[in-house]
Image (spheres, rainbow, N blue to C red):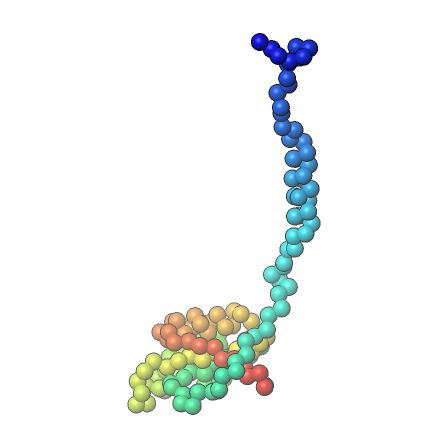
Length: 146
């Protein structure tokens, strides 16, 4: 029994996907245009500074200085650096200087690297400390006032 006038059958409803696709494309274009890409080569990095006061009592420390040209100093003495193994030998000699002191604890390696020193020269110091068997390593930072 069909109670509709004229005997017309009702059309099945369907979803039109074309406006949906158009909206998604507009959102995609908006996201592509508004996204910013940062380049890692353009990062401006400042070396850290410290506000803390200097320690009153200094334990056994091996001060290693690295300048901007890749020259090294161990306890204020210039070191002829050819490779990492030579630097490790010089560190072992500096440790031997501490062995005569009554405090027999492992010395702390303090790396004082120049702000424009290459990363490779600092990594060489870390590798030489590992070869020399020194595991206590820290980095020095400058105060704000300097």
